[in-house]
Length: 439
Image 1: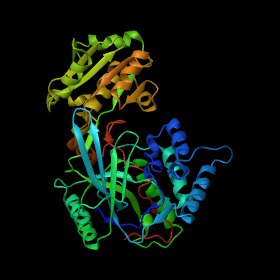
Image 2: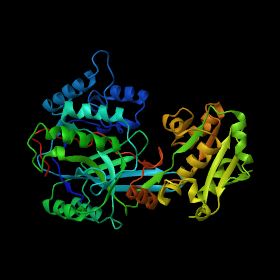
Image 3: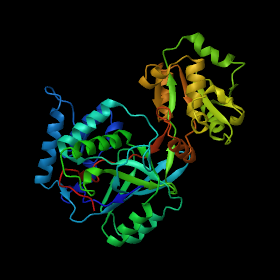
C-alpha cells in the first residue's frame, strides 16, 4: 500500500537571493542550449549538480564533479538541511490557452518504493536504459535524490490540500519563484506533526499513478537494491523511498495537454493515400476554415468520437474521423485492452502512422520519421519550413483514461501524456546515504 513520510530536505539557504536563479526544470526536458544557459545563469544553479555538462576525459567525471559541487554547497551553506522533518506544500499557478488561469496543488515528500505490479504504484510509460544509468550514476556519487518525480494519487476530494491550507493559515510561502515560461511556484515547509500524521493516514492505501519521472522511479528502485547490499536495511532508511511531488485526482489544476505528431521522410504517394482510404475505419474530411476550424472540430469531439486534425505542407486542413469508437473492430489491435486501443493516440499510431503511412513502431520511437510537438505553433512553423510533411493535431488523454491504462498494466504509446507545468528541480533535495532516515 502507498506510504508517505516527511523528510529533512536540503534547500537553498536564505542568503541565496533570487531563488529563480538557482532552480531549473527537470533534466529530461532541458535542451542542450538550455543546459548551457542554466549553467551560466548562476554558479549555484541546481543543474551543476543535477545535470552537469559533459566534460572531456573519464566518463564519470561529471558525476564526481556533481558530488564535489554538492559537498561545497553544503559546506558553504548554499544548501541547508531542514532541522525538522516536513511535508512541502507546493502550488503552481499557470495559464493554459483556451482554459485560463489555474492553480495546481500538491506536496513533496518521500514515497515508499514498490516494484511495479506488486503494490499500489502504477506506471504508464516504457523506460530506456541510458537515462536510468545516468540517474543511477548521479545517485551513487551524490547519495542524494536531486529531483522529485511527479505522481497522482486517487482522491477525488483533494482532502490533503485542505489540511495543508489550514496549516499554513495564509502565511507567506517559504519559496516563491516565477520560471522562464511564466509559471509561479510557491512552496511552504509544513512541520506540524498533527498535520503530517493526518496526511500520512489519508494517503495510506491510496493508489499512486506516475505522471512524470518513470526513469527516476526505476532508478530509485535500482539504488535501493544497490544499497541493500551495502548498508543495514532499516525500514525508515531514506533509500527505501523516492522523492515525489503528489497531487490528488480531484485537484482543479491537474491538466493533461496533448503532444502532436509531425511526420517526415515519406514518399508523396504514401501521403496521398490518406485521402483515398475508402475502406478505412475512418472518414477523411476536408476543411475550409483553416487551423482554427480544425482545432474547434477536434476539441468538440464527443466521448465516442475520435477525431484527428491534419495539416499538410500547403496549409490545407483536414479531419480523420471515427464516428463511434464502439463500432471499431476490436480485431485491429487484438493484443491491447479497450483502455489502450480506444485512445486517440493509439488509433493515430496504429491506423494512420503504421498501417496507412507505413511508419514502423521503431521509426516512431526513435524519431526517424516522427517528431513530437507540445507547442502547435512550433509544429506549424516546422511544417511551413519543410522540416515535416504532415502535422497531426490530437486531443489530450483524459484523466479517467490515464488511470484506466495505468491500472491495466499496459504501456501507453510514446509521449501520450503531457502533464503541465513541470515540477521544479532545486526546491527540495533528499539525502539518501546509509545514515539518512525519513520521518
